[in-house]
Length: 363
Image (tube, rainbow, N blue to C red; front, side, top):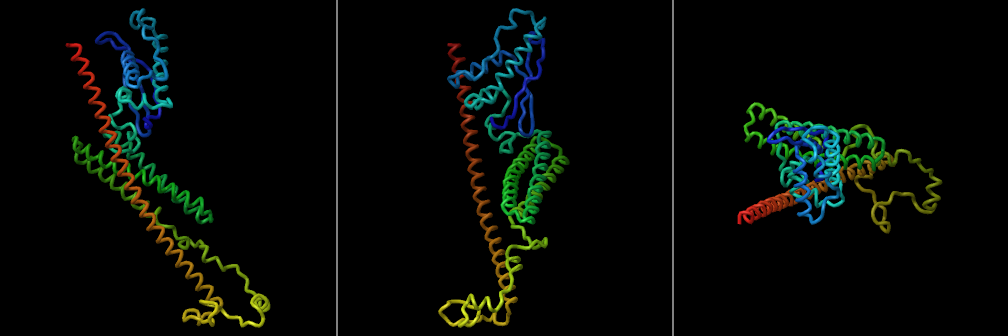
């Protein structure tokens, strides 16, 4: 139940039918949306009983006294006791949600009590697959994705700024953060597309369906552009920022002839050595027409070519990584499908147990 962020019971309501009783409003908040459930105290008692039976241990908090209002006439001078019970029920639900052990909050009984769809405990409202969107919640998700895309753009701009300042480690960290966010957005865009298809099948107007299809297409275009920006290494030269290879020899002082003679030995000719040192030094066709400055420029060019090749290799490795991430996402989807199947088996088992109890009563 990690998608649920908070649970509140802010108020209650008195209902006269079928007989006078009190119902409590439960507000459930998640990452993207929130919803409400109305429950009677007797339903809390049933929840407590079922959780205790299914987990073989009572929940971490006790329910408020069961018969606190039984001696009073309905809704007459009972406001203080009703408020006390409301606070106790809120504490009860929050204790289950925040407990170290997840056996109570992950049970089907608790999820059904809060109105959580079966099998959505991990993926619900978190951008996972199989989310059932309403027309309003679909628009909420679209707005959330637009906000996430703006966050990715901010990460890319921060990466470029840090790169221009020469802070390579921080620039790399910002780029990795942008990639992670973009991968999450892509997954949620796919879910949004599936949700739109379901809304279309449920009878959404053709004009509204086309408008929302265009909205998804714009999201996909933005993701494609951002993907190119985060997977291709930024060329520092396009902004006039010198690369390490272009500044390697920028501030090197030229040694005097006497210093070179002292270093290399006065009896040896001063020549540039290429290849194996034991052989007679030979100029190449490329270096022969060059002076010292020309050789330095040649070195700069070769280093820049190596940088370009490394960038291309990085892109290839990143594509391989994305393939691995796609495989991992598929495995996660398959595991979720297995979890859904397991949940459905649990539901069927619960229904069979209920039917068995009813048959035993009839027998």
